[in-house]
Image (cartoon, rainbow, N blue to C red):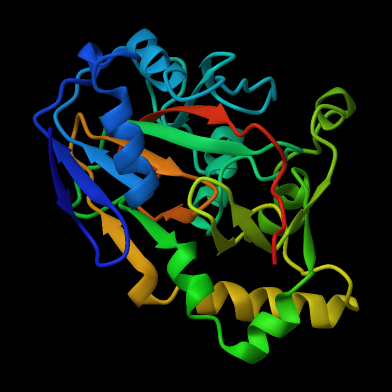
Length: 291
């Protein structure tokens, strides 16, 4: 296994490894060490099936389920981030499936709307747009962002929380989406997480914020909360904290949701096919504070 860093503070490409051959006793510990160091691992030229990806992800924690009806799924534990429908076609731009993808273009960390969010996500490229660089994914390192926070901004964020609401996207991001059914809403009620969180594996802090399921910092009046949220998002996603991944077929990316934000860059969503297969493992506890 060979590791090549991709960014000064995080992200690495892992070569000379077949993920279908990794087991608890062979390869997984080396991957965990690299994961804890770099936060984002790129495994090129993989050929995992859906079952193989689930088996690989399960080596690193409890598989996250996706019971939400609005998600495009192969199963309860495999979520397709795709503009291709079940019949193999690209729906119209006003189709629910396409509208649901709008939130992926906003900075976020996976499953932050849950009481116990995702620890790690695994995303594999199955189909990609033809246009060069279309559908690239950007990642931002919240360790480096936290360490670089100006004292004044750090003071304003210290002790603050943010409400992460699964319904937020339908109200503020893409209001053309239909309301979430009451039965689905009951599965994922709004939750509150600290904006500055502790990362137990690295004994460090990161900025834990998102733009797809919330738009203001709590404990302030609405205008001040929105202003602080925007200011924080703008600071932590500066180019110096960001790695941009240009996908190739067979790439599998594994990243730490406790440490990174990510977003997909726009592509011709109504004409060019893009299908990514996502699995995730849950964290063992809600985000914690240790300041």
